[in-house]
Length: 346
Image (cartoon, rainbow, N blue to C red):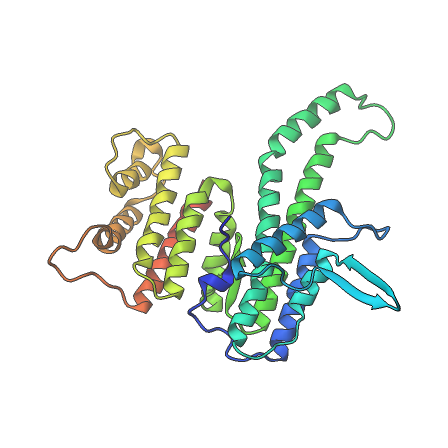
């Protein structure tokens, strides 16, 4: 199974020209954050089975992408007198050895990226687990309501099962949000200009844009409703960071998906739409409550006409359309900002 890892996505972009004490601290902090989201040992000193499986899965997936059989030794073996002593290391110990290994020389950039890939995969796995928890929450609440009806509410010490289910879900999500915030703060303090969101570590823009546009946007599209928006915008950011072709086109796709999803969810899609402009009209229609007003309608249509459409069709014998780096940043930030503004109105 192929796994998308940070080290491969940014293989051709140098982020760490040297390995210093800052990187040593960052990698140890990353390891400790993984321990926070997947505690390996319980209070009695026994390994947690689910955690063992998760750590092994992350190790195996990363090792395969790096072309290795193991990231650090999986077992120990030595002679004690005439007796051969052998045994396996726990996977948290294996990964700690990997994350804290001495830099052997060579490419500091590759060395750090491979280890941050471990952190990325761990956070992605935890995010996927919570997606399943959140997806099943409605069913759990429905079951809990039945239990509350069956139980005697007048009984002393009665505890609502619905409240317990809600608190449990909120606690899990809240703890992970705190871990994500700490990871991003650690990355910022290390001067990396990197940001983790929704399963991926990517290059962040300036702090003001990140705080006011990017962070709220990624938080909103983490909901499964906006999965296609999330996928296309991540592609846009990766292409921009790696000087790939047409990142603005993918950003525009994300914005178009946002508009289409809102039209569908509101029941305004009629089936006769031929493109983004028609879906924008659905949001603008007075019969639908004018979800967007006149100037917003014009601005959105102008963006698709002037920015998206030239990249969505073959240039033929005309000059190939191209945006400057600054224009590309503006296009991506514009699509994020519009998507954020539209989603927040839902």
